[in-house]
Image (cartoon, rainbow, N blue to C red; front, side, top):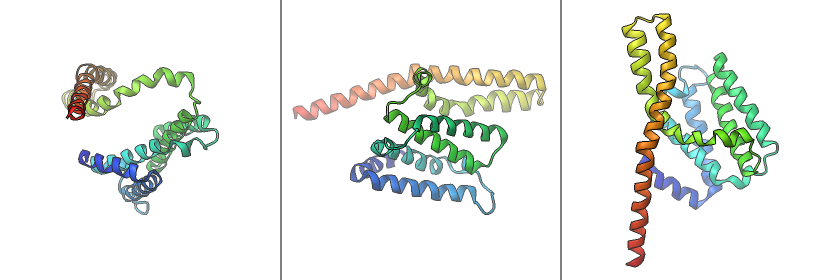
Length: 208
């Protein structure tokens, strides 16, 4: 999937509106396939990861590239908070998976629109740096859950209630700590090294 990123970047440059429309169509098509609206067999998370990640990535980059359109959305900040609250409520109450996905997409869209309009709540600015951990959270959460919840709590301790509670707390703490360490000692140095490598290469090409 990563090999497609240069192509996606080219599509953005070729036409932002066209790219946005194509991203929406692809997202809807894969979403309808995933949910099988007539049978309800599959959920979004049942899809093969790259097939699920590609339309999400495309939609996100398309929205970022069309920020001028998002500026026209009225009441973007309250709408983002409302959409996020609806998404959380649906997740906690076991709401329909298509509605959960739609609420999260709307929350992200309205949040980008609010940021574009300069209407960002104070608490948002405070928690925004935590967004740097999202990649490492995605990378490590499955491993921690498999070890603590599936391995120790379920298989080793036979689902003991007290152990389940303790392992649940340790899982959240472990994911947070491991994600921070990954970001601090792996992702950040790797990003700095890559930035320096690209700068050195561009400098050599400029001199040539």
